[in-house]
Image 1 (tube, rainbow, N blue to C red):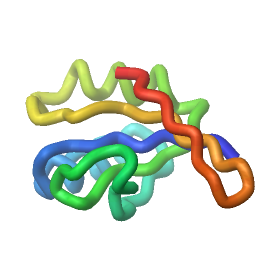
Image 2 (cartoon, rainbow, N blue to C red):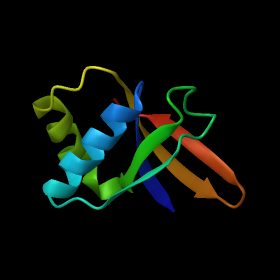
Image 3 (cartoon, one colour):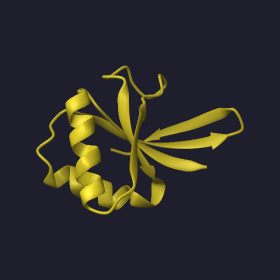
Length: 86
C-alpha cells in the first residue's frame, strides 16, 4: 500500500489544506503524523499516491508557507518505507 503524507508546522495549515484539496475533488483524511516523518504539529494530510501532481499544484497555488514536506509512505508488512518528494 502506497500513499502520501503532507506535513505542515501548524494545525491550521493542515485543516486549511485538507479543505482546499477536498474542494478540488481530492479525497483526503487528517491523520497523526508518523514520528519517522516529522515532529511537526502532530497532524498531517493523507491522500492517495496518484494525487501527487494535483497536490503539488494546489500547494503552489495556496498561500501556506509552513509546509514541511510531501512524503510517500509504502507499507511492507509492519514496516514503512518513507521517501520525501517535496
